[in-house]
Length: 225
Image (tube, rainbow, N blue to C red; front, side, top):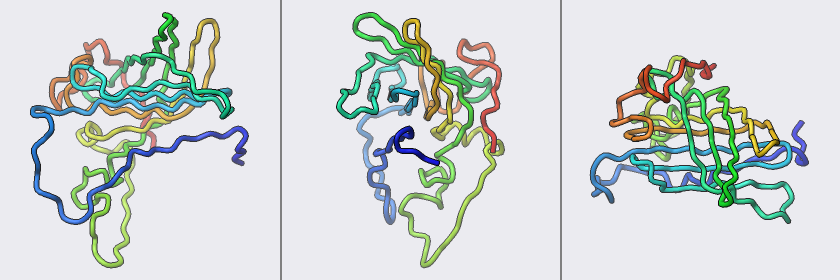
C-alpha cells in the first residue's frame, strides 16, 4: 500500500505544447551548425530526503541548464543547494547505452558529495510515446475518427540505432557518500547523449563508444522487458 507519510514523487512539467495539426514550415534555427542533446535528470529518494539534479550541456560541455538540490519532507525546511554537479558516465562499447554513472556535487566550501548510480532497468521513452521517432505516432497528431491503437515493444529488441536517439528513463539504485556517512536509495536516472559531446569522445550523431575508450565498460544488461 502507498502511505503518504513515506512515499514521495516528482512531477515532470517539461511537456509544454506539442505539435497539433499539420507541420509548420521549417524555420531558421536560433543557432547554426550541428545541434546536440546531452541531458541528465535524476530524482534520488533516500529515507530522510530527496536529491534532484539536472544537467544539460552543449557539445563542449557548457551548461545550458543546471540544478542540484536536496529536498526535505518537512515543508518548513528550506531546500538545500548542493553546489555544482559533475558527471562520469560509462557506456557499453559500440553503443551509446549508459551502463553506470557517478555524480559528484562540489559545494562552495570544498566539500564533495558523491553518488554512485547503479542502473537497474531501462525504459526508452522516445520510442512509442509520441516524442517523434515514429512519423505516424506523435503527440496531438490527427489519426481519424474513433481511432484506437497501441504499441508494445520488447526493450531488448529495440534497434541500437533507435536507442541512440531516445532519452532513457532508468530505474536506479543510488549510494550517497557524504563525509563518513553513506545512504542508499532508489529513483529515476534519466539520460540522453544524442549528438556530439567532447568529454565522451562523440563527434557526430552516429558514432559510438569504443572498447578502448576511458568511458566504455563491459555491457550490463539493464534492458529487461
